[in-house]
Image (cartoon, rainbow, N blue to C red; front, side):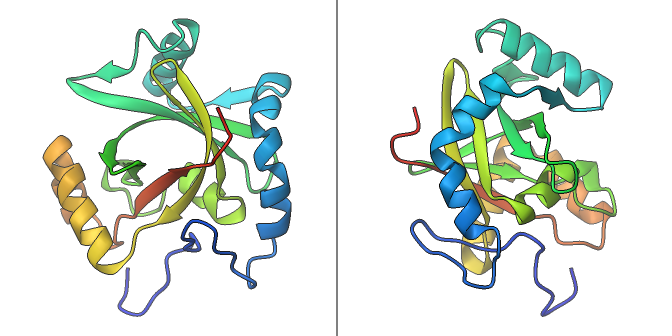
Length: 184
């Protein structure tokens, strides 16, 4: 990403609201109901074949299969599509930083951000499944020193991230997912 350019995902710290973000109020109102939405609305899994298979196995087993993949831990992230409004789910490698979960929007080093990351710009409220544990969260892009520290954490977990960054001119985002209180 060019110097001075802003990542499309607006940054939020827990409890902060960005008045420039028109979706903040609506997103906050949906926090309590995202779990219900996931069970009541159809959730569309990743269009990538092997990812969809991984997600299906994860969901069908209640997280007992699929949590570990190729020697690393994965979670399921459900976002709301920014254009369709439909729920979208994908599997991602994660790390843990204190009480927060960390994922990387690498898309294998492709030139453009993954769709799930772009969806977070419109609505940072997410549903997360880690093993059998499901909860609501709020996603934000890590910045500056925090991003660098978390990039190192994630590159230790999945060393290919460094190779992905070398393949692209965009700065690959690191996303922090904060658990929403009372969301279990």
